[in-house]
Length: 288
Image (cartoon, rainbow, N blue to C red; front, side, top):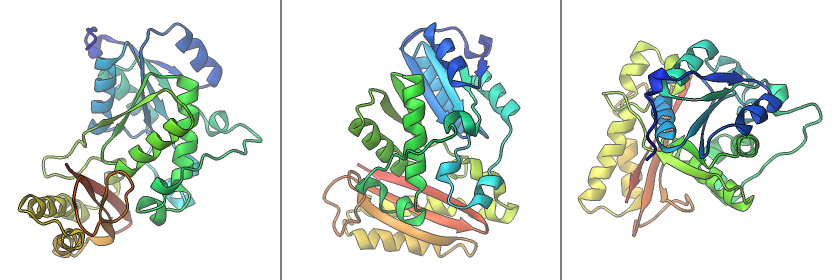
């Protein structure tokens, strides 16, 4: 692990264009760690930045609300934004450089390319949000190429996104290592998410049912249950105890393919998407 000065003592530089980013990185010490974000940073992002800062000589945070990964324009408009606050968090967490481009800087006039990842992007979030992972893969490929980081850091909460990005980087021969960081949670178990801000007080009180459901299914697995459907039913049963929770999907899938499992003979991923009013939350639990 690299030894560096206290993150609180560092200053962060904000750049907005590809040219400014290129110039800043030309003098950067290697290795470089990248933390791609859509802003509205929280403690989960802090953990990613602090890990990148500890494991690399230079840490770059990108702040870009990517329109190509939103299927609903209203959802894009509703996404929370506060760049000044985000830059302050980046500085406090030890980032060296913030890349905060405009949409036109990422997708210049005439832009007409999309990165489409295959089978791993099709189930679960891919089925629920058509086109979402094309948008994710496209913007992350651009960021990986612009920054050229040795490592990039993502939260385990977005488990399928991790698999999609790893597949994309491997297939396109992008050398950046995709590093997964454990999900950061509130004391009551709710996974941190920029979307949590939209929960009403009643919905926020109900939302930890996601974690309770995952832990209940994990307990069944630890007790010897290996039926995929039994574990999915356990997830449904616990979610049903909360009237404000409307499940979109529950899953007990292979960790490599995300195909639903009839029988768990090895590692598996429990995951779900649940609607609370107008807010959609996801969470997951890895079974080793």
